[in-house]
Image 1 (tube, rainbow, N blue to C red):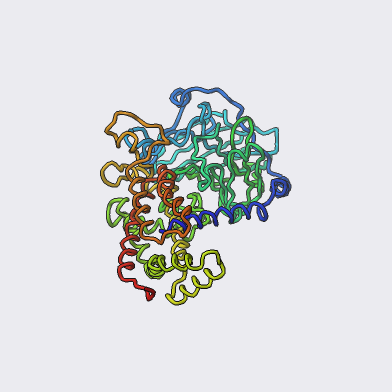
Image 2 (image 1 turned 135 degrees about the vertical axis):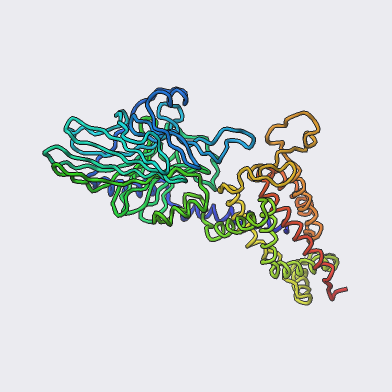
Length: 559
């Protein structure tokens, strides 16, 4: 890979971003105006605003779970409990995913409201009639029948108010990550009432996030086929509210998703806000459910509390008929590249049984696809390298006459059928392919805690070794910025060898700058996932082999 082309590509990308932000991106005032218009639209609904629990007590997770009565749930993938106080799902952990590579503790998704990092899900009914008692976050529900929630045994919760109106919840769970809540109101009174079904996700604080621009972590919604993503910082400044005919709302972490799916064919309002020092994402139906005297009405809400496994999310999108549910995995703007890249990695992983070997196989496949383009580029670059003595002679003979030098150079290129720009051609697809692979390795669960061979035990994290303690021979733990491991160094070596195969820059100053470029890239890419460096090292080796063979066969007419 020609380092001059790398610099050109990086510069061009930066220029595009800067020009877009200067001339095309909406100003903060325009964004606020757009948001205000959306809020005006949503405020036209008669659906009530949801009240939020102001409780700020902070106790340990264990104390909070042991504080009240709970219903346990478990299947093959998750386990936890539902609090009878508020019927909140506020205790959930994944059985197949560990917090650390060598640890035994499962990844925890949800926590009770009284815990500092409280994160929980509520469902219920709201009303504009202040004379009706409705269950809230402090209401204690009674359980009827089964005492544990499993895929084969749903549970039923009941709550009765002073107006003789009975609220029931039938909660079921499948064998993966989906909860189904069937809410029923039995009106035993002599009056008619209007109720609005709702669901809300509340988070007490901003979690520990990656905070990297290629990944969104925070509230997420699909509103009428449109993806809406809000950062935590944005929500603290200004909330979001929008009416929808279809979609869902939720909160996404890097590898996990908490989402609420309203009943199909029911209009709702999605709200995202920050109140009482808590983040809230919720939906509420905009059309009331009218329940007459001695009448019963029901509503269904789906709650997806999932690890973002690609095939599982795709299955739910199809099964539940939810458009764009797959976007909870942040495939990004290069969706048409990142999705096929994931399928290729998944195919080779199942075939070879090792994620590192799958990356190597994908790299080899990419080189095969790009072989004709690379072959043309290497022929041109090889001729350019062989022509360097003649180019130096032309400059020496015509020293001081730039026009003459340019004319003779162009004549030389024409005679030898050399295009100086052809070396850039493979860079265009390679930039997009590199970013697509990086995106897939960064945002999907597939590479998480996957080993290669030897010391590379997690291809989703950086190379853990460092040259500054002789790769572990010296008993000293270097600071993170000095963790430049064996794989990044090997990558830098392949970059340096590639430079030797490419034509040297005509300017001596440029040549010296390019000489340090492999060192610069080694330091910059050292924190990147080792799986990505494995791809780039493999790509460099394959490219050098192809380039060397082409150079051996390339000749020029000029003596």
